[in-house]
Length: 102
Image (cartoon, rainbow, N blue to C red; front, top):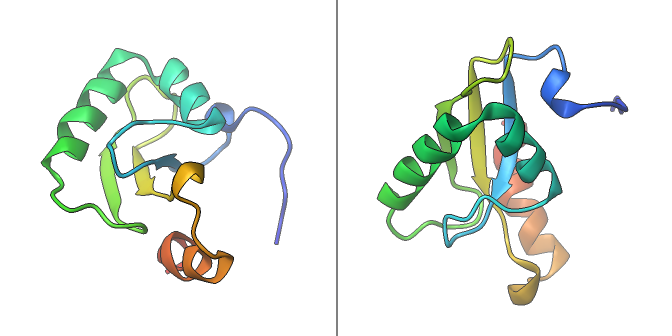
């Protein structure tokens, strides 16, 4: 595994994967940074796309454009558990993390 330090919005990649919860809220530190860098267009598209998903489950992925993120083609929004509804580590690991690895 490689670990990089720096601004994720400036990484030389085509796609970013950020967390959202099953209430279709773009939340979390990384999601906030990406949302600010991408501008209103990403947030509007994400809210529109995410609200169309019925019965979102942990590990579900939604693709949107990248807004104003330079050099990015799209953003993947992955449904992750909220800390308030914490689940056992094994359940979380077998959900969104396995989805992102495939």
